[in-house]
Image (cartoon, rainbow, N blue to C red; front, side):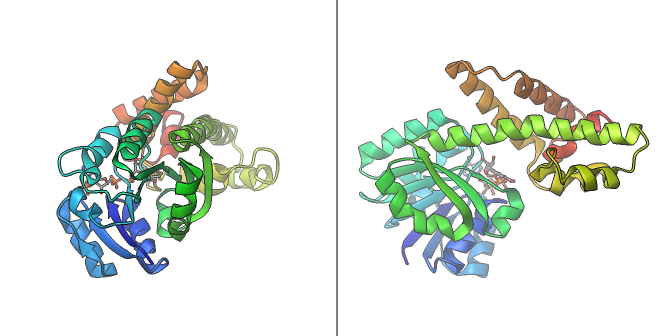
Length: 288
Ligand code: NAP
């Protein structure tokens, strides 16, 4: 059992922090910008409420964060009242935000200068993965820092991997998003085509999901895509944020991502049509 802190009790952070208390038995201090969520969390899980990220990090052996984007992350770490003001020497900051590799390296260097560890540890598995404590966690950082943090991360994860030095977790998450973007467009086109061809979509999926076309998206999303329901987790706004990080990184490392760049523009169309909060399978709305 350790004294830990969690910053950012959103869709993902709220249940992740909960598992640190319930599965890990850790003594958890929470901070959330909108304090009512943190009050609710403490009512449900016990633990302590902090007024600022800096207060939350005081005396904590590990500090976890899951906020929105690079700028949010800078605010809760190196900003005024940020956690880095009070991190203990030898403690570890573990960031679960999907952010750029650049901000990870920047914060990794600041942590090193302050005498504490830093891991960039973005997650996949969505809202359901967080609720069920079954996330995939892609980590960048030093082996010994990873080894010390791993038992706590295991509280909300089913798969955890150290991918390389600081930044490698974010780079791995970018690969994840590249793979998902093109696949969802393919699935959208397949379902739309099946409908236009007068096929029974359920019967089609039943057969092809046992073959080479099978995917997690096919198994978990075909039915809701077919029904035109798009309230199942990861939102288009978040995906566009992630794809902009991906395309920026591709520009600097020389990767060619023609399909990913096109899908990003398709998502921009979905946003323009009011689909900002729809889940990422809403790509099919452009076709039906
Ligand atoms: P969310 O529900 O919008 O929660 C974001 C959290 O960050 C909230 O607690 C918010 O506080 C806090 N926050 C944002 N900006 C802040 C700032 N400047 N200062 C202090 N706190 C700030 O988002 P989420 O769905 O949990 O996603 C969090 C991260 O996980 C994102 O990077 C996202 O891309 C990634 N992710 C999400 C999913 C998913 O399915 N949702 C899956 C994988 C990865 P308030 O309560 O005050 O707004």
